[in-house]
Length: 171
Image 1 (cartoon, helix red, strand yellow):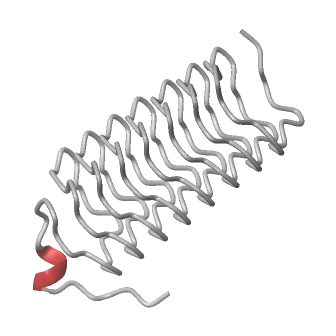
Image 2 (spheres, helix red, strand yellow; image 1 turned 180 degrees about the vertical axis):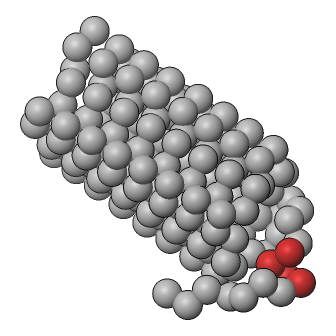
């Protein structure tokens, strides 16, 4: 993937901004309002997005490896195909977000609100989903091997074809 170099377009950190393929890795974007922004294909690896408003944002195929998204608002966001390996999403809100085909290997999703979220075919190996709210979540075909689901609420979740081998389902 070729990322755009910093330009005026990539410096526009406002709601609805067009930040496709921008190189924003390692940036401090904590508490920024990027609601409705198009960040598809952007490099946000290692970025601090804690407490950021990313509701309804397009983060499809974005590179968010090891990013801090703790407490971020990602309601209705499109993260399909994004790389979120080892990202911290603790206490984030992902209600009705699209995370189909996302890679969340080793990610921290403890206490996350995933009600009605699409996690079809997501890679959640070794992810921490302890105390997560997975009510009516689509986890069909998801890889949950070795995931920590202790204390998680899976009421009404679709787990058809999901791989739960070695997952912690206690409590």
